[in-house]
Image (cartoon, rainbow, N blue to C red):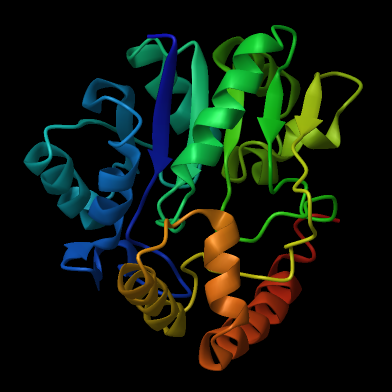
Length: 253
């Protein structure tokens, strides 16, 4: 297939175990995310990319329940898992999403896909990586790259960090790969609504509840407005962003 979404998913999170099967809006986090993606993508183009760990058997059950494709591979060598998954389903262009971003903006996703399609020479396109250059909120993360570029990457690096954090090597090597970072009109990088800590479950539930009450679309701009105008949510976002940045500082240096 030409384009497919590969959702990176596992239940063994150290910060917040089993977070993606917690309930939001009457569904598991990952199923809420899938329902959002189904507004713009067909089921055959959405793949749950999980691990061989017994812990992740529940994700296979979720995939089957929703009649979605799934792939199981190495828990720690995520690069190998993405490579094998893309080869199994013959995915030429990979849309890499993580299951801890259930409020991913589907309109932004389509916009980025179209840009990637037009720019034939692009190897890698993202909006929140590298973090120091991003002005999008944390939680709106979208990465798109070619399978052939991933194959090239896999042959160039044998470092543990590149196997675990698949796409770092792309944007750390702009002379080797054709890389582009999408910029927002405003700097919204001081906001966070990805699901990394337990109190962010409350944050995400409240964002959904407020959006329903006010009948506003859940795109990244509106989500930021909700956080900005709700003191309790703004406090969670601020505190967790500082904590998260501190935790990943070494990774992106």
